[in-house]
Structure formats: structure tokens, C-alpha cells
Length: 297
Image (tube, rainbow, N blue to C red; front, side):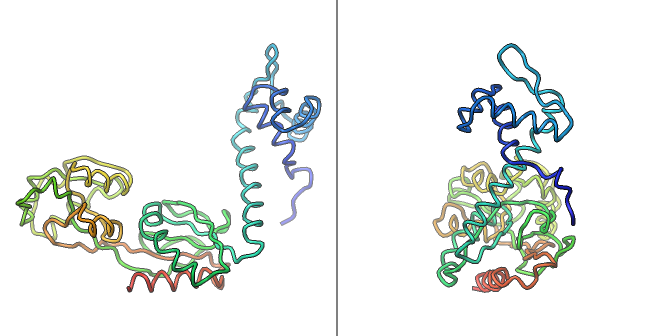
């Protein structure tokens, strides 16, 4: 791909523009960037000339973004963030094998990260750059080497490698169920239920497996993240259907307990995704093998 040099952004000009936009003042931008007011003004004029648009309008002693400036500001900030991130990745990876991994937020925080010391102990030359992502995206475009994906093994321009199936169980706080917890699925309908908004049919499927048809499967509180569902269950707001791997610590510490021991395997699974252009990435392949060994353990 050949880029026109006239279209390559100058980071110094972008910094001057972003700082002046944030402060509403060229003088304040100069103080922040340790530049003279005239230098900042010149850089903004050069950026305007390069873009062919007016970025600011002067109102009294302040600079106010024009309509074109307001539209350009988010892109300018994104370019600056990407430039900074690229520098940090290069610095972090200068003496180590760097792996950029995207992972589901709750999977990453509750299952992966607590186990990573063992992986890094065995791979001392590895540096990790981990970010949260909840849905498929262009791995190549965003510079990731691999991703953890829940769902069907489908990802554009990438290869999905199976990790494990998910098993969910109904859990609640000991305070909610008391000394006489429910023993059957029918009895469970008498307690409030907690729902994950992205899996609205989870309780319907669980009760169907148990041979129970009930309107209670649709009722109760809803949350859009597993982390909030776990906290709600711990707070005694209701019974939650949760993957076992997410609540290992809560079960071990008896902060949550399984009520009506009827596990339900979900129709989807967890997969390790690698862009097709990086299938031979040595650190990503090592991490995949290690994750599978941890699941097996």
C-alpha cells in the first residue's frame, strides 16, 4: 500500500489542535506542550491548510471549534492514542516477545489473569498487552495477535481453535436460600431470578432441561455484564445462572452456593482466535496450548 505523503498526519500538529480544542485556548495549549503561542498557532494553521478546512473560530479571547473541527476531533484523538500505543508496544517489546491479546472482559479478569503468573513464570521472555473486547472485530486492522471468543467458531479472516464448552449452574448467596434451600426446579421458581441481558433465554433453557415450563423464567432483574450478575447474586438479589469458571473463588469461599445441582452445557463454546496471517505466531500458540492445559486441569 502506497500512501500520499501529503495525507500522512503530523503528530505535532495533531497535538496542538487537540490541546487547543480541549482548553479552548492557544495560550493554554502552548503551556501544556511547552511551546510558544505562536508555534501552536502556526501548527494549527498548517493542519488546516493540509486538511483544507477551518478548525477553529475565534470568540473574544478564546478559540472555539468549528463544525468541521468538532467532527475531526475524535479522529485526531484516536490517531494520537494509536501513535502513543504503538510507541509503548515497541518499547515494551524491545527486549521481550510481545503478545497482543483481546479477551472477553469477565473471562479475562476472573479466569485468565489470576492464572497468568504461572504462564509468565514458564515464559520469562514474554510481555503481554491485553485488552477487553466483547464482540468480533478485525484483528489484523487493530493489531492483535489473538483473541478469546465465546460463541460459534466463526470469525472473519481468522481461525478459531476450540478451548472448551461452557457449563452454567444456578447459584445464590447462602443468605438468600437460608437453611432450607430449594431442592427441585419447581421450588426454585419461588425465588427471584437474575438474568444476563445478552442471554435472555438462559433460564428458559435451564427450566426446559429440567422439564418445567414457567413464566418465572422471564421474570427478575437484568444486567448487561456477568460481573454485575455475580455481584447481584452475592448481594442476595436473586438466583443467577453462571458459568462455573467465573465463580470458582465464590464457590470455594462459600460466598455463593449451587442451588438445585442441574448443570446446563450451553450451545456455544470458548475459542482461541488467531488472524490467518499470524497462525505461526510462536507466543500465541504457546498461550493457546497453556490455556487448554489449564482447562483440562
